[in-house]
Length: 490
Image (tube, rainbow, N blue to C red; front, side, top):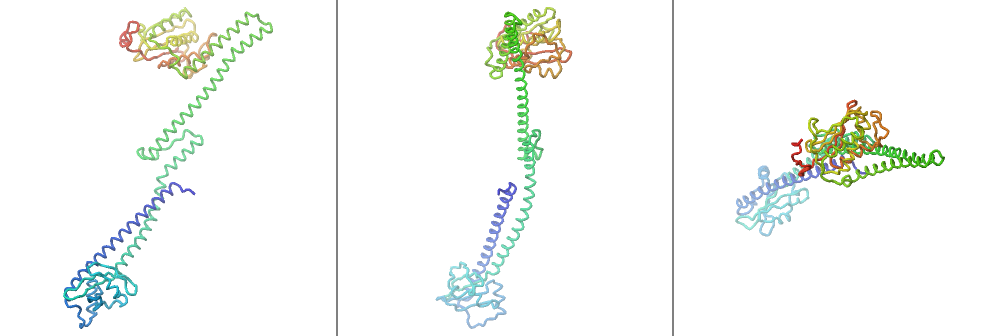
């Protein structure tokens, strides 16, 4: 069974804490033991040196032992057992504390094993009841050895008590810190649980859910929350865009099917009518030719849109040109289509003459854009409605606008006017010769393929303004006017 992150972190922390406490306890107890042994060894060496010099003739065997004086003296110097060894290693005299049993002292054999160079060794009691620390030194004035020993019972008891206290205190501290760590980890991991709940809500389909501000932005949790919210926003946008694309695709396919079905039904109807004798061959062929022409134009428009979507720049044959030429031709086209209309050609500022608008563009495609705008003005405004064409340079863009004083459009209609197959029939008069609703979509795609755009500004009852904006061509003399001075020439 896999442990949770909280449990794994707690176990790791507790393990490290236990190892640290054990190491500290071992170091402290070892240092204390070393300190006590060094202190005891120093006392024993000093005492043996004094004894070796005080008794130059060896131990006084005729002097009776007086425990009431000897015991406090031995306790004072911390060496309750003194021994004299002759040159052969035999014990020739001892001074012992009467408070200790004779069997609790080291054996004679153990005393003979102590080196006489002043180094301290540990001896076992004769009855195995404890340990003794012993130091031996050669006697002065006679051939023998002076040896002093002290029990390690107190030192061992101190070390044992320290280790017991460390064990109990460490265990209590470990339990306490483990509890605190469990609580702290729970609080620390709470933001991750909030993030988990947010992710679960998103997985259930709620793409609007966001990770709340769980921590300061400078912390790891804050960075994680910010990154997740950014990612979730992108996902929501991507899903929304996918849904919109699917909706547009379904609408587009439905519109294409409808638009293709209309001429095909006309062709089939004409053939059926001719077969039944309802029309002569010339009339039937005329209808078939008209519908076939309409079908061909629709197919070509769809193909052009597909090409502009996939590789827009590849569909253009660019060359230096000036939009004034297209604007002037558009004015003549408007007058030819409806002589009753007032058509004006001005610069971006109405009071000025048309200004230079040099661009590097495909003239045929740009003529297609302007022709569509002119046809749009004719088709959707009453006869005699004034139209103004403006051309020139604004900032770093070449601009050509077509303005009419027709019925205009609502905001909803203006937002969809560049959609494919969209017609604002209810807001504008739709002539019988109106197209399929692809003209403005193609026009905007051509404009964007040139690195520009086609926009509309309109209001219901206040006409419409279609503006073609393209990047201005520089470092080229167009029509005798230097582009760098184009704005000054307006």
